[in-house]
Image 1 (cartoon, rainbow, N blue to C red):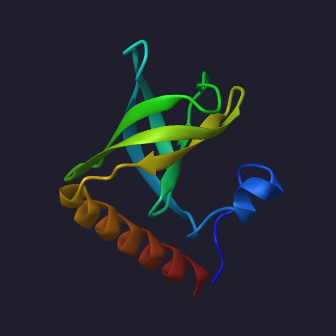
Image 2 (cartoon, rainbow, N blue to C red):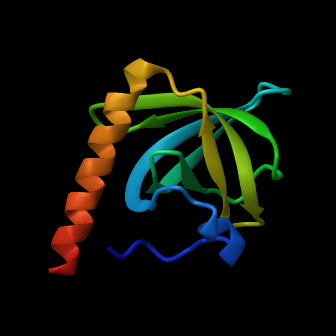
Length: 121
């Protein structure tokens, strides 16, 4: 199975437990200490995290609360910034995903895998 192009350095990609798939959605991120809300675009999604396109990403290690929205569903979780790329975006690792949000995440991943499979054939 192929995955989307890696966004970070090689060690970040190697640490992933599951592949990320192309996925487009809107995200709202709230930095835990300041409470400042920010908006971003999700470009990749996995069971354990996502990549957010944004011009002013937060530093690695920052704890955030993330909400991801599509036209029909939403997902939310605590997360940690794993890596940050100035003027490009940041990779998040989900922490403490509530059980009632897991079906939404799994549905999105299944749709993303099916879309990627269609594009390859």
